[in-house]
Image (spheres, rainbow, N blue to C red):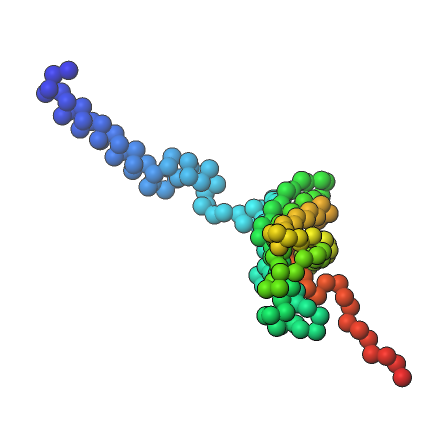
Length: 194
């Protein structure tokens, strides 16, 4: 190609690009149609997006990541700490069944001996709760036995809850929390009648 034609060809190419770029800025032009799909308005339908079934996120509930177990009658005494339990990871797996989302929630953690190097079986209370708009729609407590032995003086634990069921239509609004529940399902004691 002769050198004299290169500037003309480059100028034509630039002119074509400028013309195409202008199409995107014209109201109702091809650029607008491509960006909005021809809908006319460039808005995201959040209600339709939230109505789509999704796998709810699972996370460790703040403040329930660990639990201290003391010798009887010595709660709060660091020298009487027998064990410390912690939850370290959570995961979930979802499967839509009809109008519901069935969620398998797995959790894993560790129990370590305290200053006295205690050994034995420790019960770790693991709570799984599904919450929608600050309303609890599912809650279950599992007492997981963990055997702590020498020479490690620690042990790993795992727990899987396969029974979490949430409405599929509301699944985008649900969060699944996992944590250690020191209180458990104990009801407050009623005063004895005289």
